Image (cartoon, rainbow, N blue to C red; front, top):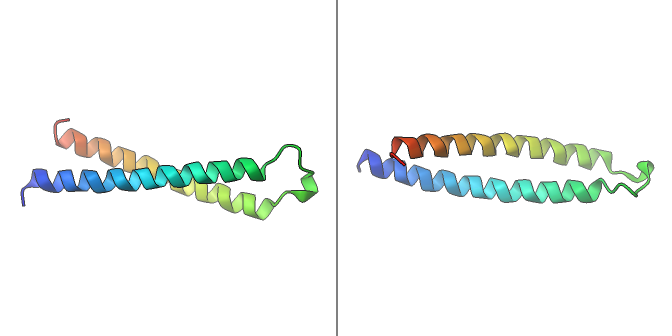
Length: 80
């Protein structure tokens, strides 16, 4: 298989992974907004869940940025 085809396949795989991460990040963002209801009493906040989801969001965002950088590098190698 040619190098170009390998790069194209990797590009498709990485774009799919980035799209999945994007959807996961959007879901976590929505969930955090709901959990951080400004009209809910502080004592009612689910702090452990908020912290867990915030950490997940940060981790997924790092993975997402890395995927975007890889996509840009592959596109550059393909001359796009």
